[in-house]
Image (tube, rainbow, N blue to C red; front, side):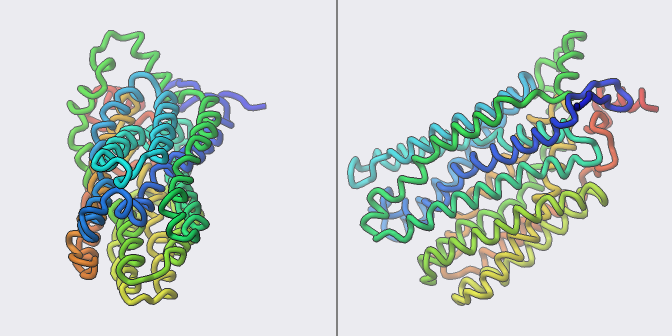
Length: 459
């Protein structure tokens, strides 16, 4: 039988010892299913939407417009982060996890029902953009909510490991999203572009139901419940206005998370720009490119928790930096192999880049971001910081297409762009607090009143 435990030094009572594993499972499966919805749009933006929704713009214009709609969600994610972060810090992590999955499933299902440009004209891309924007709002609180839920339930020496399940689930969602296009991409073009492409989007209604069922049984974290208890005992206006408290004491930390999150550019260049470049420009078969993405992400699902274990032992920053600088280096041979149509080396470099090295960021990144903040503003701080940083990642395929020029042929500026983002992320993380040896209730800015008083009590 499981028993409650007590957090050392502050008397906060935790829940069952089984809850960290249950929370991690909920984060992993929920993130996988939610990001399945989010990522199928990326594959469709590269392979389908240029033809069906933006055909009158011409080949290059259609590609740019379609990849631009992929980035629309990343514009809305920062806006959604304020909303979801506020809800999560005021009303709990669980409600955000339920809201995000329900919203994402409903909107993705509606995309599968959209008529095309040929059927209703300019209204078709307008509706597509609106629904993609709603996807961005829905997903804005997913990683911050799931990460806060898992790391606040976890033993303090295993926080990176448990929080890594969120990005592990994200990787698996990418696998599902890519894999579902494999049998569909084998359809003749007339079937693929008429009804086949809709199937992955319509399946999201099943995704939504499964994820909701999994997450509804999770309990709130002991850290959040302790904050609620203190709020009831003190008439502190800051406790009722987490965003005001956040920007009073954590503005610098939010900005640091924004720049550190630029490492995400690697992911979207790898999965969206390279897919479009390889298929449309080089002539690599769709299935070949999709299989490469799937295999690389399978390696990622396996390696992310291993990197997280290392981050729990030696610190978050060394592991993060290895992922960021390694990705900035490996993007060069990967895109070069795609440009040469060298399938074997494309697989080798793709797996090494995305499946192994970039996964070091996956193992340490969410712990780095979330542990810069104390409990009362953890969700809003992480959500706002990451979503503003990820916004550039969302537009990275569009920026890459513009840099590469007609036919996406000039890949060198794309690699430079990706490399610079990795270097900026590395430099930023070097300035952040190393937190792996701290107790959960000690996390945050030592200059904030609650953390300062906690540290004083501990002394």
